Length: 113
Image (cartoon, rainbow, N blue to C red):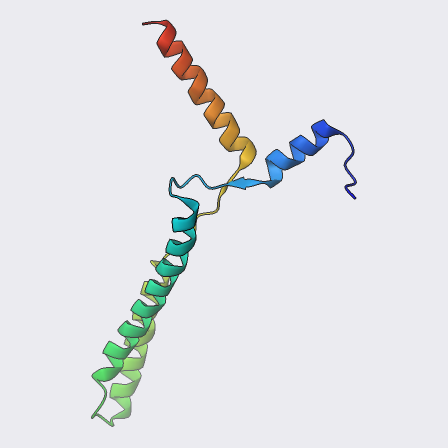
């Protein structure tokens, strides 16, 4: 059972804890696209590593191997920094406040016409 008894307290907690997707996509497509974008980033990193290592295929010189390894690590780190990162959803209280401000501005605009 909830420790919060007052309905106003429950509402206040709900507005701070609950989150709302403000990205502007359908929730089902967001769920699919997040997984897809993460997968695409991992595939890109693996492809980059394989491209660098393919050049080393016939060579046995240790200096070449060290150079290719450092280039591979640099390239993977650069790709990891620029890869997909999910933007967290906004708190419900902020979303509701933004919508109310927008509605009041729209109402003021209609009155002046």
